[in-house]
Length: 204
Image (cartoon, rainbow, N blue to C red):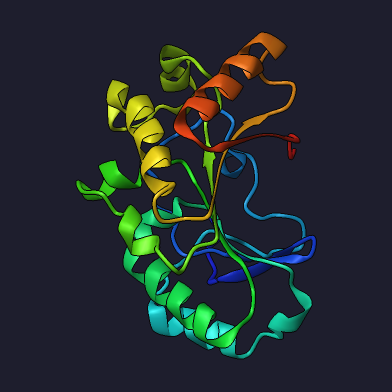
């Protein structure tokens, strides 16, 4: 497996931040099972987890003015690198007038064994959480979390806790992967949690 240190990469008009390859899940649909990069990103398998110094160094030499949004999302779960994520977001807020988003599986509290959501206050503008399905059993089959069956409820609880600290909390499913009835069930779940629901396009 080829490895590199691609920390920042472009997707459309956003800049994405690749901090770690660690993830508690082995999702059946994960893109990294079939590719090592996204479009023109370069190899996203990292030689090692990114340090705060490495992240800031990349940000300092990048023209951030052309990007609409900064997104923590790479070939791993961003909350696995929580300390660097928080430190990086603080630097970004101090130096760039850009909204900051985290794309996550929503298992950060299980990863760290505590509620991490207060650490996002004032730093993160949007969190996008992969709901995938309204059914806990199907979620476990798809996501294959190392935390087992408690993962689905923990993910929902994480989303609800995020609403206290993050202005825009979104849960997503992928179009064409579940039925319209299941999408309505997801919409109801999100409504009960007080978060937005988004059906996003499949990226092959």
